[in-house]
Each structure stands twice: as structure tokens, then as C-alpha cells.
Length: 266
Image 1: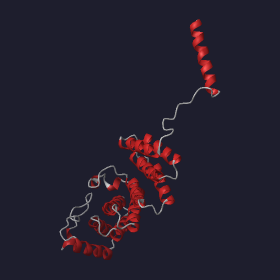
Image 2 (image 1 turned 45 degrees about the horizontal axis):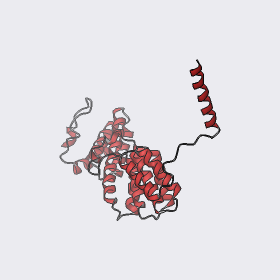
Image 3 (image 1 turned 30 degrees about the vertical axis):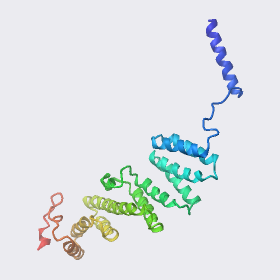
Image 4 (image 1 turned 90 degrees about the vertical axis):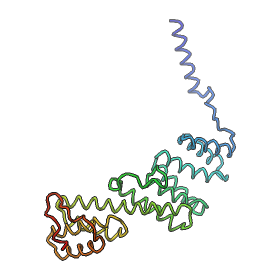
């Protein structure tokens, strides 16, 4: 009983001393570190995938040496670390902050590129991103924002080392946006909203002229106008369809028991 009481009493004393600030605080291991050491340690943590620790060290570097050559680099690395940790909101905030503070920085083009990557949400390599998920399943808002970000980079920095990859990604995103619109057009068509389906498909033809989705867009227009009994628009869309896709079989297969479309192919 005596021993138990002593332990409790000692614990109370320690808690009291801590509350009064009489016990030493945990030592800051980075205290006195040079900017070079902070940056080196942070980069090592980043390379090792320890993103939270890397961010802490980069932030300490920026606050301890705000006017040094490493401060701006630390801001860029923080944005990248948030991106790698898949914290989209923090990554975009860090990117926007850097662009606002350093619009003329020699590497600001990379931050525009990173903004596109964050929205693209791609963890694959440059040559492998085309194997991502079905574009129809992607968030269309994020897709549009990613496209806008890459477009801004290409327009502002056409000679940037990141421009070629940005252009490739823009092409992919155009197809993704077109495919999403086709997905919606199909949805309307299957529910009998033929005017909405035709209008959505028309938007693909107008806005994404170089996309492979044009073939299906025209087919949906032909089918939708036929369902509405608008023979003029149907035949006009069919004429364009046959001219651009003479070997297509897309209209020959009925949808859910519809009558064959062979009569349009005379």
C-alpha cells in the first residue's frame, strides 16, 4: 500500500511540475541546423516516402530561413510532397501560393504543371497514364480543371520542358471529356429523352472534333432524330456520319430490340 501511494504521489508531482513549466520540453532536433542541412534532410525524407516529415522539415526551413535561396525551393517541395501524399487540397493551395508569390520564378512553369497533375490525380508514369480508369468514371469537374491547368502551362510557357507531356495529357483529357459526354448522351437516350441525347451528342461533335468519340456521337444523333421523327436532321446527321465513317457498323446493331438500321444504308 505504501509503495502504491508513493507511485501515485510521484506521478502527481511530475504532472504538477510539467504544468508549471519546470520540466524541460522535448528538445528540437533541428535547432541550429543550417539551411543546407534542413534541405538535405527534408529531401531524404521525401525520397523515402515520409511525406509528413518532409513537409515539417521544409516548413521549418522556410520559417527559419525565409530570405535564403532554399526558401522558395522549399515552397515548391512542400507542394510536391502534398501531391505525393495525395492531399489534393493542400497541394493545390501550396501551388497557388507559390504562383502568386513568385510569378516570375524561373521554375514557375513546373508549378503550373504540378497543378495539372494534382487535378489529373495520376500516379503513373508519363507513358502509362493512358491506361487510367474509364474516362466516363472520372469526375468531369476535375477533368476540366486539369485540362485548364495544362492548357495554361502550354500557353504561358510553350518552350517549357513540361509542355510536351502537358499536350499529351490534354489530348487524353479531351477524349475523356468527350467520352463522358457520350456516357451522358447514352443515359438520356435509354430513358427516352431523345432531344437531350441529340443535343449532348451534338456538343461532342462541336467541342471535341478530333476525338474518336465523334463516331458514336453522330450515331446517337441519327438514332435520336429518328426517334423524334425529324427526318431532315436525321438524314443530315447520317450523311455526315457516312462521309466520315464509311466502314462503321455502329448503326447496324439495334439497341434493346429496336428495328435494324439497314434501311439508312442504301
